[in-house]
Length: 340
Image: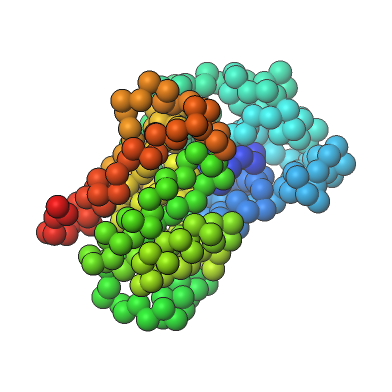
């Protein structure tokens, strides 16, 4: 049976959005994935993946020696096909040095000269759909159901979440609302999460999701709303997905928790500032609401989001009112209460 290698070493959200592609490929044969150590943990237990191969491209495996070492390992498996979901020269060289005969990637990728087939990069599609098109020789666009990302938290993650909630005295019948205030891009961080927590606390228990780097943001929220459960830096990525899956709604910036929520099917309020969903990274949850200041002529200003506003005012985030975001969250939570 033929086997396929998917190389995806981009951001965490990109890895989540690759899971629909993995699910489709798994119908044809074994699928292995080369990804970053952080994303490798995220893909643990995934039913579509035979083997996750961590590639620490900026650490232990950096440089040409790391590429050659991993290429030798991959060569022993004897893959028939490599799909380059991340299009750098490094990834293309890895697939080539591994002697994988068919190498498919986007026609806009940096490593495209090393591909045996180039697929058009569709700006008009969600990124999950773009990635799926790598495995669609007939060019058929995927349905919304086919685009739904997936993750597979296991018993270990369920126990981590249950333990955390018990430590904070959360009862089994409490409604939960997750807030994810962080982003590696400074201008993607909406500044009013503390105010939002205060507005939502009378209606549900607020839980905070994020990495250790988000601790100062979480501290500002718990100062404003002491009843909030601070899970920032306390859970693995897959356990964070499990916690998000237990929530009635998640409010997040344009960052990885948005895609975790899509994978867990959690209703989502996504706040977009310097970026826009048209870039292909909007929510894929069955129920979602996108909030953004659409009247600003300077928006969008960047594909990712710069660390500082180029014009100095950051109105794309500062003009998004907490009351509006709270109203959207409560609507998704299906509460009868209405904010004035």
